[in-house]
Amino acid sequence: MTVELDTLDVEALPFDQYQRYRLVADLLAELRGDAPLRVLDVGGRTALLRAFLPGDQVELVDVEASAAQGLVLGTGAALPFQDGAFDAVCAFDTLEHVPPAGRAAFVAECARVSQSWVLLAGPYSHPRVDEAEERLVDFLEHKLRTEHRYLREHRDNGLPDRAATVGALEDAGVRVACFGHGELGRWLALMCIELFLDHDPMLRPIAPRFFRFYNRVLFESDRGEEVYRHVVVGAKGDARLPVGSRLDGPATPPAGSSEVLLELAAELMAFDRDRDALAPELGRLHGIIVDLEQDLSGHRATLADHATDLHEHRSTVAALRETQALAQAQAEQQKQVLERDLAEHSRALEDARRELQATLQDTRTRISEHEDVAATLQADLDGHRATVAELRGELERTQAVAREQARGLTEERDLARGDAARLEAELSRAREAQASVERGLSDAREEAQALSARLAQRERTLASLRADLRSRWGNLKRAFGRKPTFDE
Image 1 (cartoon, rainbow, N blue to C red):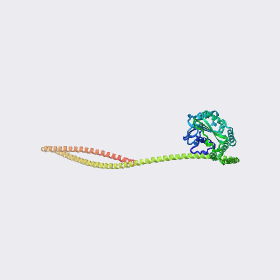
Image 2: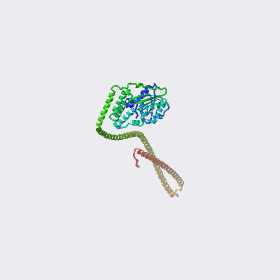
Image 3: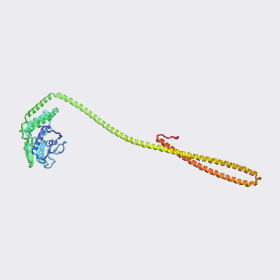
Image 4: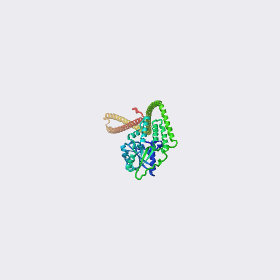
């Protein structure tokens, strides 16, 4: 058992626990100086001594583990500390749980690691103390139908011999004094009440009030010729022994305190009688309670399953919300990116439209210019053709005239031999004219060929421009989502 010392009400502790710790705390209060003490609690896994000595440094050692902070696992017969490591070494109701063969070593070890004091509190063997424990065991067995672990160990090991304990300390060079507490008859009665209250769940809430009554009212006067517990105090070196100044008060209980205990005992006896009379009904109610507890357990299990499902659903919803939020954030980012891309595409499209319009205008202008050039060339070609035709006609007429003249000359050769020179001169002129016409015709042919070549070049340029225009027109339509047709 471990306790939360920050919230512990020491006056609500069971009177038997309070008795042993308060007794040692009072003795140490008589011995201490101004400086805090370093104290070792052997068998102190509960750490209760810290609540009674809040200003001191209390170390713990025990053979059993607990959740107490700083607990060292070890046996009292071989303490894992150096000689004189502590100002005081204490043991509370511990020695009776040590097998007899190991008690001398236990006491010697406590003396070894102590620098000043050894305080061994607990019951020591005495016929009346042994008888009181036997009666308490009988009460547990016959009345409560139970067994007490620590009382059983008392029986198995036998209570330690106080004289032997004193002798072991003296053998270690320690001066010894003994202090008794807990009037034996009162201890037995109060232990029966304590165990009776603890045995019945209905009575357990009463126990703290009962303990506070003893711890506040009866502790100071709980002494007598026969007591249940003694503290064997040893002092080493120059350390002084206590005189028990805090234990010198009157041994008579305060007025009315005995009546309170008798009244409590009477009430408990009445409760016990009523409980026996109501045992069948209580048994039936207990069965109902068991059934209800089983139903409640089932409902709790169902509720736990539902709670688990709810937690899982909440986790799923939270995950979905996170996923949704992430998706929304990503969608918003994508939307912003797309909006920026759309704006850029719109600007690019507008630029493309303007560029296309400019290109179309430039193309139309260039086509118009080419058409004008082509028309001019065509007109020139037509003019040259007309000139050639005219020259051919003139040549044919000249040739016809020449033939006619030749025929006339042939016919009149004999008659116009005198005109031969003139005719020869005219023929020469005609030939020169014919040569000139032929040269003009050749030049016209060459110019016509050059014009044809230039026209072919202009037609190829026009075809290239038309192909470029079709390509740009197709790109524009694809940009607007339409597929260009061959006709377009």
